Figure (tube, rainbow over the protein chains, first blue to last red):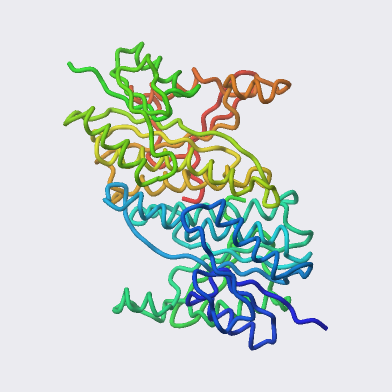
Length: 239
Length: 239
């Protein structure tokens, strides 16, 4: 039997690299898509055309087409993203909103397009949402807008005429704070026991590919961590 | 007493021009912001830098700064927008998503920034949402993402630390279909009596500036039209 195949969009980031390593350890064939290669992956797509959404999408998709040929992906994990703040009066409001859009929405949309063309029937697509963006996020307006767009994209992709293959499951994780080295550096005095571990998230995704507690397609999956214990809640806000 | 002042973002479009004319007829000082001037307005800001959000914002704001000096705006009506379809498999998915982002989110964000710097205390900011984007919009994914971002922006701007002046009211209209010449041309066989008239919307905005049925700040204001009669419902989805 051929190995299962996963594409990790953002596979060189903290969460992405954790996913790459976990799926590799399970003998999956893993392709990483990111700004730089992840040497632990079986194959890499390096993202270029950083200032043009259309050209970036065309470039990434051409490389994915070439890598896969007629092979299908079992799962696409989009874990790209980033964080930048700013309210409407901030000097960097528009600059940061632009960055957030590129980091979360360009990546999620290109992942959706890859899913439409290369995911197998019944395959899994995960997207990177954020719990705070379910309400207002005045101190990080661009971040909230980008994540809200990803949440709504989830609802669209779950509909029958979304272009995704039959039976595909799209689910978007809504963490509050992920326990990454960058977040520890940025918030050294925070309570790390309320942050969600990368291993937890990677194992959650892996479980879904194994059929364990798979969310209903179109779900926003809240990850709430307290005293080191993470609880998963599938909300379907506004549905 | 000095005339009241309104900025209409998208003042050369169908709804924008209707707003410009109504506020002019009430003896307001009206500035239109759009790709081309609206000769009926008292002043115009022509939008340039169409491919760079940051430069576009800087250019528009510099012109608004110069026009207003220390004068404050009583209202900012962002009625810019457009429509393009496409699901995740469409050839034009990313291209149209990019266009929708520019037409709805760039304009709304720049309007928010103008509000942070030039709206008077207790002034009104309206943004262009869309009823369908409260749920999934598989046939028009880019449109839905952009409008969902505008909805979430509304929640952010309503919070105390958003950067907006004290007592400002931000409200986002959620029409289904506006009765514009372009929509009549695009959907000639539709039931026009279920479309919301531009005069209705312009008068709704004008009423808010007069203190009539002003929505709570952060409201999504659904406009539902049947047999030519429009009903207004302030929802606060996900709040």
